[in-house]
Image 1 (cartoon, rainbow, N blue to C red):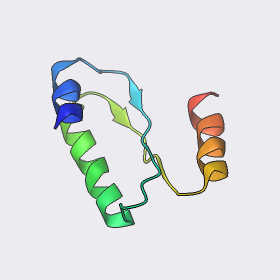
Image 2: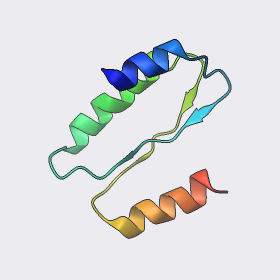
Image 3: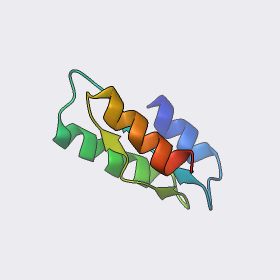
Length: 69
């Protein structure tokens, strides 16, 4: 709930949130639920679909192509 509280308290209008998950215990459906939760809490922000992978190179490529562009 800490993340939700943070997102609800700050005005993120016009900001983009990039989700990155590399959880050994989370599956794809739980990641999708997290996206819905983040989008519900971060009113006014654009929430990218992010990346869910256990492969470091996939995550690094996503960050380089989307976040650090």
